Image (cartoon, rainbow, N blue to C red; front, side, top):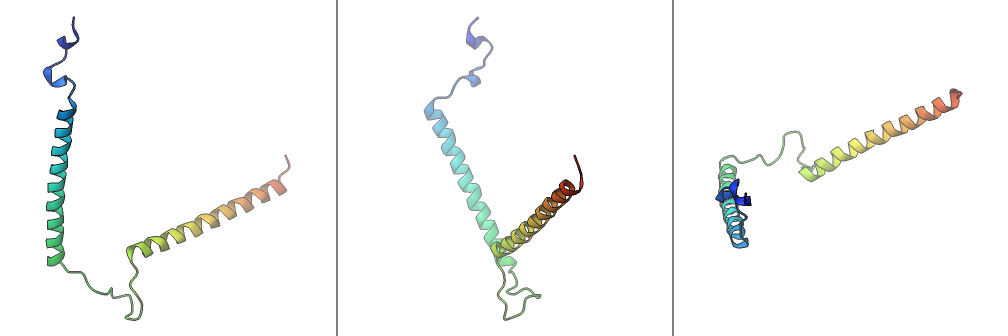
Length: 101
């Protein structure tokens, strides 16, 4: 029995040229989808303008960007993580101090 008895012609290995053509076609399809997506996003942005200032921020205060909001959220989470770690360390020391092994 030869190797091709159980394989169809579709299962034959691709040549480099075939693979490159498939990759180029996939790249062109992606670029076309991306171009259409950007056009739709721009159209939506024109039809649905955002407010200049949120209501809860005063006129003198600058509006925080998404990067600043992420940074604030990360700071808060890190502060809580440090708090719980310190609390855990204190609890372990108390247990080791009062419990005899």
